[in-house]
Length: 234
Image (cartoon, rainbow, N blue to C red; front, side):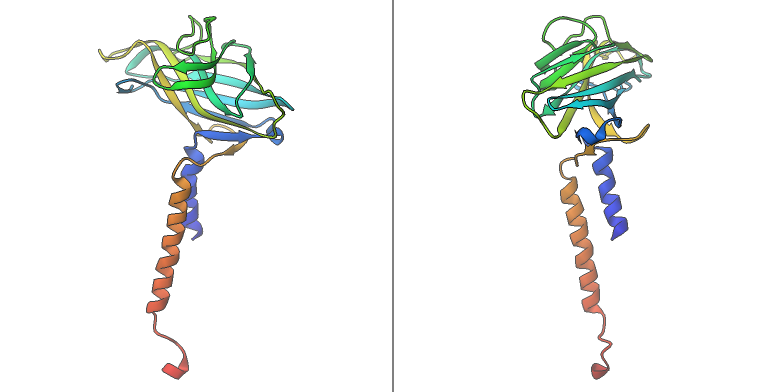
């Protein structure tokens, strides 16, 4: 039973797309790995990652350090991560950032993603997550800084979800490689200590319960099939 539980629970942590933090998690971090896609499907070789570290908490704000890496590889020959973002629960009232991505846009639309609560860009002064000016992180590069999320009311915990990046200036050996795209992120526990509480991906809890119920039913059926060892019936 323990082995079955462990097998079913591992994907819930490795592939969750939401994570919950509170004040006790200061100093902890988590890493998000991004793919690449446009309106027609996935883009081979277009990837990135970001590590977020909770550095400060007040009654109405959470501050994270961030490090963004552009990990794209062949057949991609060039790309720039011009911005990244996510949704929050509760909704933010405002945000600020420093470093590589020092421009903030809130309640904005991202192509092939939809409306998001906040994004952080390497340039561009408009409230749009689609662009990013000429800033960001080029292929093989790394960018870093800090971001602060502000809230209208005091909160006891914060949930981050729906992580994404925006790619621009894409080039590759494939003739159909688009010039811009987005990438969705999944939380990974590799590459460092993971803080916060990963939220199970949809369906994982149900699969876990089905696995436990199936194991119980099999054991019960086996027990009923065994002959009685009571001497009275020998």
